Structure formats: C-alpha cells, structure tokens
Image 1 (cartoon, one colour):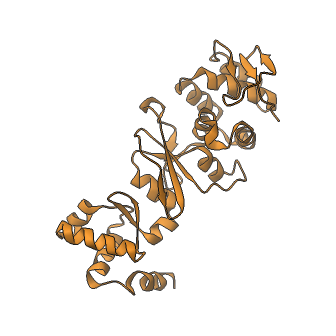
Image 2 (image 1 turned 180 degrees about the horizontal axis):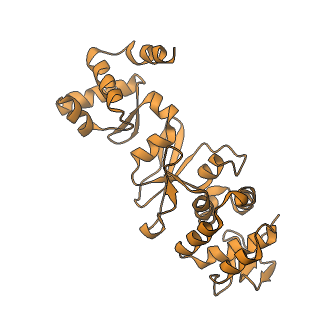
Image 3 (image 1 turned 45 degrees about the horizontal axis):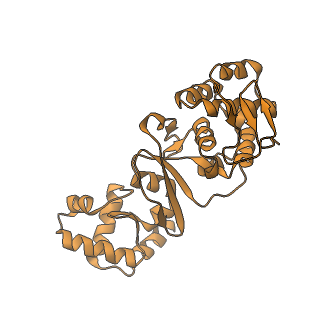
Length: 258
C-alpha cells in the first residue's frame, strides 16, 4: 500500500522524462544529488537537467536543500537527518538537536543543528531551519553513524553544548540534560573528549556542575581536576553577577545549579 501511494504521488502529474529521472534516482539510492550526478546517470544535457530539476521541485516531488543539491521529497521527510548530513559535508548533528534525540530533554527541537569545519550559512528547507556551527578541525570529532546518520556521540553532544550554551537552551537546560544523561555516558570517553577539546574552562565548569549535582564518583572528579582551568572562569559565560567563588574548580558561580 505504501509503495502504491508513493507511485501515485510521484508519477501522477509528471512527464515521461521526469518520471524517468525519479526512477533512476530511486534505483541508485541517492540521498542527495545535483546536476553532475544526474548527468552521469542520464547523459542528458545540462539545460535539460536544470529544467527537469526545477519543474520537479515546483511540483513538490523534489526538495532543494541548497544550491545544486536536491533530494526526493519523501526521503527528506522520512530520513531528514540522513539527508541533511549528506548534503552538508563534513557535518554531524549536535547541540540541542542531538540531546533531544537521545532523550536527555523533553524539548522538541525543530531546528536541525549541525557542526562542520566549513563556514556555511543557515539553511531553511520545508520550514525546517538548519544551522551550521563551524569548529576548527581539531574539535571536529566524537561522532558516528551507528544511528543511521552522522550524529555526535552522547559525550560529545554534551561537550559541544557546554561550549555553545545558547545552542542548547542555556545553562539551566544544559544542566538538566547532563543530569538526565550522565548514567548513560562512557566516563573514560567523556574525560578523553573533554581533554582533547583543549578548553580547560569547560573542564572546570563540568567538574563544578557534576560535584554540585552529586552524580559523579570522587575518582572521576579528581581526574577532571587535574586538567581544570588555571584561572577563574564564569560558570555561565552569558551571566553577569558573581555570587560566589569555588576554589576547587576555579569557577565564579554566577548561576544557581538546581
């Protein structure tokens, strides 16, 4: 039944050439494609390809992700993360989007947040905003495709989010996500990623928060403490007033930890 519905949706209003192109793309299992990919498959002239892609997009059978990058409409809705990370290379899903996917927050995040080593402007596709945060290559790690698409591992999603608090709803939301997800983390991997990220401020903030939440074992905290910031850092970089100082982690406590 599902296949017959797709058949009607895709071919009821299309020409023979358009139907042929859709069939070819489905047969090759292409998540995303552009003019060059279509030309290699069909040997059509580029003018014909441009016209066909434009017409199919207007008819709603294709979705344009960005310039010269398309996907089949049902693929976009059925495999959104797969399509987006295939269209933006290199990239992986992270921040609040990943934390929501892992169930660390009850918030439903409509924006798809990606990390890439390239500077790419925000995209908007079918009312979905796609934001791309640029990391330097040394911080572009900690992701896999075990979920069927490229996404930050749980440990890295939390680390990225602490680094860019505004992209996970702020400090309070981050703390909630860390508390909810802490037991699921690979603790050694979490420490390794924190050190590899090469930002001692994040280690100080992480150690302070975990101690306040009373969820981490002391030997874990001691390992973190070896790599803490040598100078005082704000617990919330976006906050202002300093309420107290924590000497163990060199943290200026300018926010309450629930």
